[in-house]
Image 1 (tube, rainbow, N blue to C red):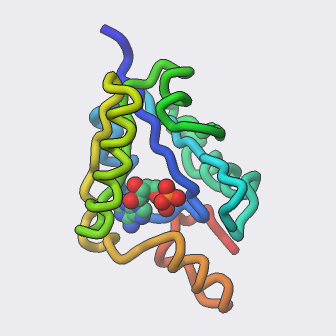
Image 2 (image 1 turned 90 degrees about the horizontal axis):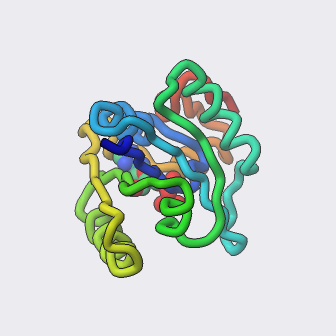
Length: 153
Ligand code: ADP
């Protein structure tokens, strides 16, 4: 049997407790989870790519199943290049569902061998978004309740 490899694509600006929950739950399903930091030149990330990757490297340094990579271009092409057959995404609410459904269907059309798997977040994390954390950080607030311990801004 081939290893089950999942790609968890996103900006992770920054990585939050919500993202961590999704990975922890998915750990039981996959042999390997690649956190894939996509770069999109038209997007403002606030935190540098280097910083975002460093935080995640620290958080998962003792977890051999999790790897951090960056990629450009289509997520399905990145998956193919590393032999991953699954895309992992998280769902907080119906707004996420509607948005994620479209992405998943486009990806299905682009490569039908790759399956998108969704993890529903726990209610304690469903209000957490990277956008919100950035807003709190920009305004000098305490972000420690929204992000894993290793992340200090
Ligand atoms: P993108 O830039 O692609 O939206 P994000 O880094 O914001 O990437 O999110 C990556 C994935 O994590 C998405 O599937 C998003 O729905 C999911 N996600 C974000 N926050 C949470 C959360 N609090 N609980 C569960 N999933 C989440």
